[in-house]
Length: 285
Image (cartoon, rainbow, N blue to C red; front, side, top):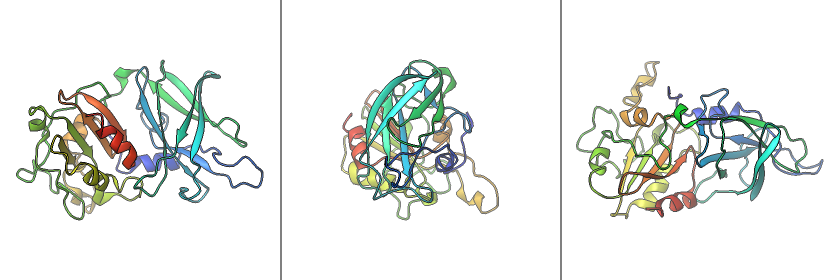
């Protein structure tokens, strides 16, 4: 799988078919639900059949992403071939971040085209997305082993020009992922490039991890950057991707992996997450 360019998930959301998400009256402002994951049509599919998958959405109006007026819950219906396969109510998440989002964890049994709608809403148009078999997606799933590959540290940058693009380097560059896999501690791996974040959706994730995991001596906590040498942008090129991004076959970022002491992934959060979802993931180890 060829990774997509940086900030691709925001671009794919902006280019998606939109549908009404808020308000049922004719005088209510129309808002739109936007997926933060590749839908499989404009981008390569990443949603896998038969195992739990996290589908996250944001809500916007015709101009901007909604913040103060995003509804506290959304009722979602997912169908395939005209038949409803599941309905769920999704709570808004916005703890410690600016942009609310709605993550739904679902298991869709068979590959194919699925449709998301909002039951009971007026002016609703459908959003389609593809679900594919496990062999079509190389991204590690919950239950898989976390990839073991060298990640830069303060002592060894492993050829990466800037091991932390945060304005002030975070402390999560002390242990290499290879060493972490051998020390019998659970591991938290955050792949993100804060210095190049252009949206408030992705921006806070490193800071949230600092707040929630800085005192977790029982964990290996690693932040890994996306680009080998970001200065390639200034020359009009596109930087090479770091080894860990390639090993995880990520077509988006940020992405957070939480693995137990056996290096088995127990949680994965992609593209956007808040403090409450991060805490839930960390509490699994």
